[in-house]
Image (tube, rainbow, N blue to C red; front, side, top):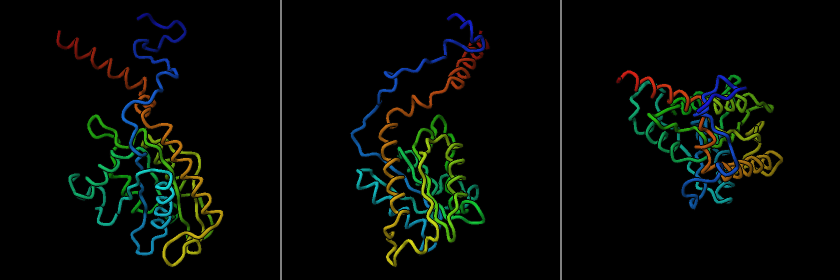
Length: 238
């Protein structure tokens, strides 16, 4: 294929021109949207878990299939082989999911070790498979004091690093101990309404992107790299 006159650095054989037709959904979309939820605390009265469970109820009402990963007994990353049962469970859930929700308390101005440990166990690549790439993501945090956005900002950074589509909306609940009753249910407030907003947006975006994620994450640089490797291997065999 001839070079593109104004774009001489581009390999035209690997350049895709996006069209609406190419955004058609691929695969079986008859199942409910699959949402994995992670929270970042091991305490019995865990407000990040309570917020996660409250969000899960909303998603299930919308029609999602929701699974909440329990981080209890998940070893520190690198301390055990990757075939540890909790590691396998987490990675299989990640592969199963089409969208995710990450919710962490704030500790020393950032996410907790419990939260980060879960994310660190999810690899960018497992052979040819990328467990997190193309999934939608919503981020939430709970605060012991005044409202902060340190955690959700950090989770957004991690979501981008994990090649996920993080939705614009987010939830930060200040003085979380005031927002949940003795049974762990969230009280009616503007903070609760924001959680509804976030889950509504996540559900919509997951419906919009599922079946299209492979095309949306198909990159010119990676196609071109594979093409160059194939040419090099062919030359070496001659």
